[in-house]
Length: 331
Image 1 (cartoon, rainbow, N blue to C red):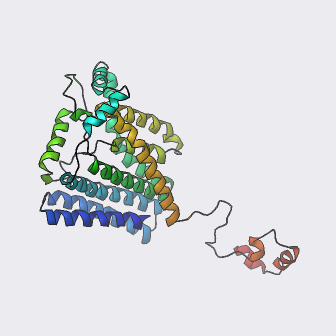
Image 2: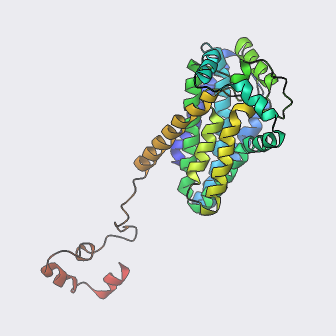
Image 3: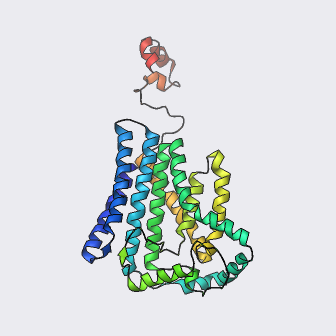
């Protein structure tokens, strides 16, 4: 899995680098260099703790941090480059779908404005997503190193799927359709943010920099995808299961207002997360097939034939008594 994840990073870096060079885009080289050096340091530290001073859990945690640092930078750059190839916005159609389901975004905003304490709680929940991802990497590394790699793979696959959908049917969310409601609200993203997204689609990416990178994807909501993935991969961590589930239920409910999303953006996130989990599971099994629980490990060498098959005939069982006792003790 680590080799596969590094391949993903290498392919994205090659695509971004070639496109940036041939397209003569403006790039904040200094900021990307700092991020690249940080990611490289974390990945090299992970390699050190995998090979020189073995500590699988620490190696996995460092790898997860380095991978997510590099991947978020590369995927964001790719998303910005795709602004030049994106299709026609579908926000009007999505808002019509919301209304057809009986869901009205301006009414939801006005309702939230009448409940300021609930709005603050939703803002906190919505803003917790990136810290949750970091916490998940640490917790999963402490339980089983392979879980970190599966978590990173699911995050990467779901992000690439969201980007692929967005480039064909771009959308920025309900707050890019409706005028400001006039409600006084503390929001994670407001109408000014929506106006900036539409400007980027119209004028192109301009200077591509991690300092000012914005989340471009409206449909499906990647914020909700992250909430679902964190909840899934921490589902069997007893002391976190219910707090994380409750927090991410808050994230999902807060996303339309705090993130300016259409309601359909939230619903569309569920199949994306499910697909990422499924493909990650199949990939992990293909890379490292799991033995049945009853099958003994051969790490210490093969068992004697009779010991490995206790249901064999009595003649074979008699032959087992001829095996030196020292051999039996090693197995």
